[in-house]
Image (cartoon, rainbow, N blue to C red; front, side):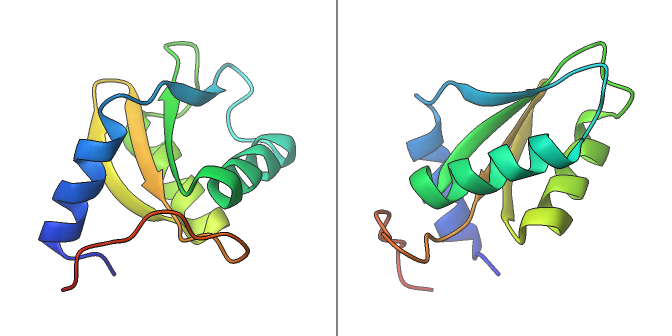
Length: 98
């Protein structure tokens, strides 16, 4: 579980990121979950865009991805969700101590 200070730090890092995954009219599929899982392992911190055509709201999509990938919800703003999960193979982001 991330502390408020850690979430603030991750939000500052995510500010300049572009969304790496888009959730569209098909919603959340197995392939999309695999892609998010892979991107989290590679980058640790990602933005996911929920398009207007998605059958899920931003919050529903974000919650589903958190459940499926064991990620941490960092932030939701507009149609974007920011997720974090420490990489098992190659950790890059050093979080502030709680």
